[in-house]
Image (cartoon, rainbow, N blue to C red; front, side, top):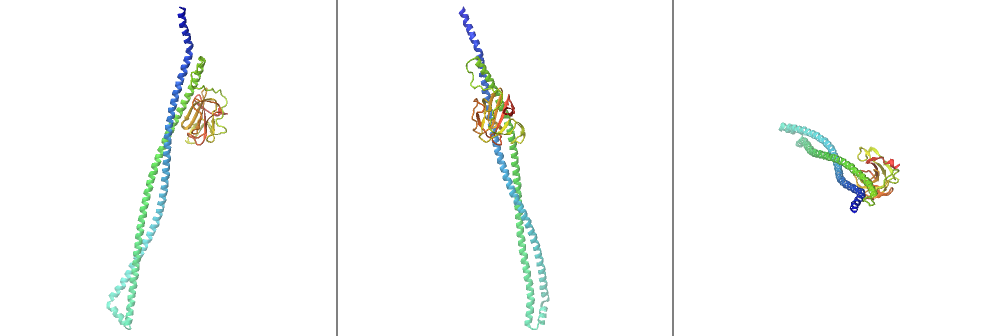
Length: 405
């Protein structure tokens, strides 16, 4: 009877002793599941960022191509306008020549008319006099030889008049032909002018169309940048959640260790930052931008700058500011290549704009203060190589200088 009583009692005692350990192990496992879930969501967010980045890159390439088209059109428009200006000068010159030719032609016509009238008058007078004139000439002559000389003199005058008349007609015809050529040249110039003006109008339409497309591309880029910024906030929120879960897991593991000697987690326990000064993440760097509102160097709008920028040459080593565990690595929108280290007690540090291939730590890795974690670059939205250093305390970004001074 006593034996039957002792067996259930022993089982109850054993089960009761195991309950806290099992409970803590289950809690650690549940937290680990949450960590895994957040990591999956974080990876999805990273993939979205990568897709948006590709779209932005494509739009920026289209913008550059459109700008080059506009520059090319501007060049053609300048060349066309120069041609129009030259044609205008030629038209003005040719018009003046045409007016001069018309004036010369009119003068030649008048000379021909006058000479023709004079010749007709003289010939008419001779013919009207008829034989009486010849008889008078003969009668007035000393002899026949004298008569012939007088007759030759009269014929010579008439022939001179005819020659002058023919010369005037020839001048008139030459001037008329010249005027005709000038008119033809003027018509050609005006035709070329009309073609050039038509081309200028077409180029203006093309330029306006390209400017419309460029405006749409800039607007689209702005929309994507806003989406990118939203994704950035979402990614940081996931990082904050991850940090909280890591802290929750750390506490659960400590509770589990107190309840059992077995190790219930796969993550290394992050050391808890107890306050004090951080190690400068870049040695000898110059602070190029401080924490707070500023005019963004790329977007040219007033935006909140959530960290401190430390300017340094490309490839300069970046060090962990304090002991901790690497919570996240990868590309994060405007931050570019980024490392986030969790230091415990809700405190994290973010290191941004790392050069491609410059991250030398991995997620879950424990790091010590002053340990190299990456290299300076200019990925993301950056105007030059520098480290963007952010401190996050309980999900809120705070001035890093309060930790670095």
